Image 1 (tube, rainbow, N blue to C red):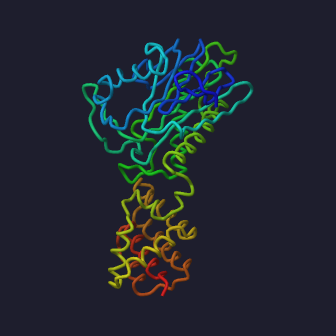
Image 2: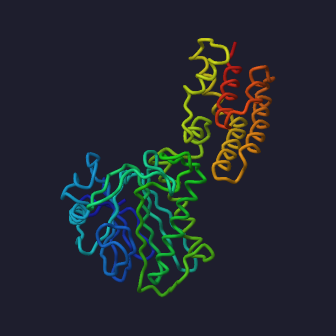
Length: 372
C-alpha cells in the first residue's frame, strides 16, 4: 500500500482512475474531472458536479454532539477535515462515522466494461435500528447528537448515470444494506425488531459523466442493480464482521438471538430456581453456555423466534403461534434426549406468552443437562 502526502496511503484504485486513500481517521477518494456525486453530506450534499474529493471520517470520540465538534458545527468541522485532507471544502463532500477506517471493506464487481466498487465502514452494536423505531431526540436549530454506530457507503460506478438514476442507486444500495443486516439477524437496539441500518447511516454515489457507458436503470431488474446489490451486501457484511464482530459465527448462539427480546442469562436462572430452588448457579451457567451453542436447539429456537416475529407483525394469530411453539418446545426436549416431566408438561400446558414459554422451557432443558 504506497504512501502519499499527509500520511495518506493508497487503499484502492478503480479501473476508472479514482484513487482511494486512507489515513488513521479518514478514507478519501480523489476524483478526476467529470465526476457527479449524490450524497448525504452536510457540505455540498445532494447532487453535485465538479467535486474533487469525497471522504469518510471518524471524528474524536469525545465529541458527543455537533456543537462539541471543532468549529462548533458539523458543517464547519467537515470543512476543517476537508482542508486537512488536502481538499477544497467548497469542492468536496464527506460523511462522518464512529467506525474505524482500518475495518473498511472494499468490494468490486464488473460487467461489460462497467465497474461498481463499494467502500463501506460500519458499526451497528450500539446504534442499530429498524425504520419506525422510537426516536432518540428531536433535532432543532441545526444541533444533532453524535451517536456511535454508523454504516457509511461510498459507491463508485464506472458509468454515466443521469441524476434520477443515481437516486435509484441509493434505493438499491439501501435495500442491499438492509438485506445484509437481515441475513445476519442484526438486532435493533431500540425495539425487538431486526435492524435495517443505523440511525446515522450515510451514502455517497459517484459516477462518471465522461464515460462511454450511459445507464439509466439502477433498479434490481437491471444488471447495474445486481452489481450494486452484490458489492454493498458483501462489503457491509465484511465491515460489520471486522468492526462489530457480527457474523454467522457470532449469531450461532441462543442467547445472542434472544437478546433483541431482552432475554438475559439471569432471566433463565430465575425460571430455573423456580423449578427446584437448588443453589447451583455456576453449574447452570456452564450448562447454558453449552446449550446455547447446540446447533439442533439453536435451529428450534430460531424457528420459535420467527413465529414471535410473525405474531408481532400481525401475520400469525397469537393462539395459533403459541400452539405451534408448544410443538417445537416439546421437540427440543426430545432432541436433548430428555423425557418431559411434570415441570415441563405444566409449562407447555399454560397460556403464557410465547416468550415466557420459551424461557421456561430453556431453563428446564439447561437445568436437566447439568452433569450429575
